[in-house]
Length: 209
Image 1 (tube, rainbow, N blue to C red):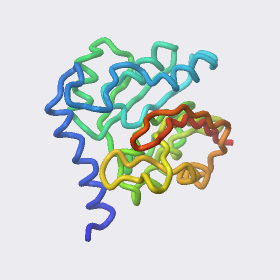
Image 2: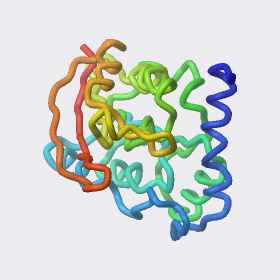
Image 3: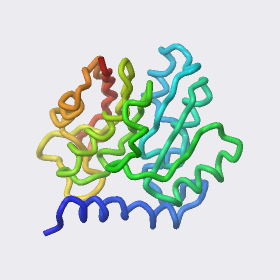
Image 4: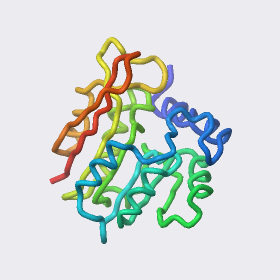
């Protein structure tokens, strides 16, 4: 049986070969939509600009969400565990103002903790096995500054539709881990996503007092 550290290594290692075999056009990456997440863009449209505020995108993939935030005036950092993913971000956006980093969600640098006015997680946690998700959510939450906001987009299913392989679509009640980590839930909006298995995309907004 693997311990947590071994399981984290295995889960993280799933992504590098896929990004290494892909290109800046996202071939072979089923999660690469090549545009910013629509539910997140809708939320951003209702916010003031981000001048003099810091934002973080966790598990940034090919960088579209990070670029959208930067376009709106935020000082943006974005990271992924995959070195190849970050390489593709830099290839796609060679003049980007985004500070792209290679980092492990489970071991973020100490100076990232509580450092960001806005944190966005777009289905990163659901890419991880269920027993790692609470720890991942606590780590995401730790990045949010006092008075800051976390926006999460994830796919929600009923218990009978939990998966044995990625993506590990989430139960609605499992997201309480963000509240256990000290955040307060501000809103929950969702849209139907697919029929097989039946699921919906939730956009959940949290804040830190």
